[in-house]
Image 1 (tube, rainbow, N blue to C red):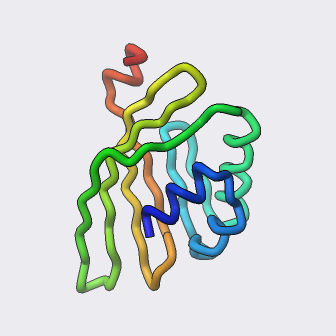
Image 2 (tube, rainbow, N blue to C red; image 1 turned 135 degrees about the vertical axis):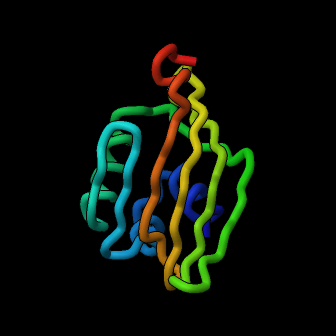
Length: 116
């Protein structure tokens, strides 16, 4: 699921993103939180419109299955190439019933404070 997500994101493929997002998805990046599929798709479109050169690269991934709640939690270490910058991110993606229900992006405090 995460590979499909990152591939669709890099291709700016809102149709595939819509197909893999749950109706009640929550996206939390380091600036804002968006709730609901339409708001999350709109947030992605705004990112695509604002940045001609943006791409995610998956560096590392670990997955945990929560049997009690029947969901997978993916911990994804990413590099985001944004115009001339490289941003290191950990994205925590929750998948339930084969749909992404939550995506939380985290940057390091040092990176946020000092731009590294």
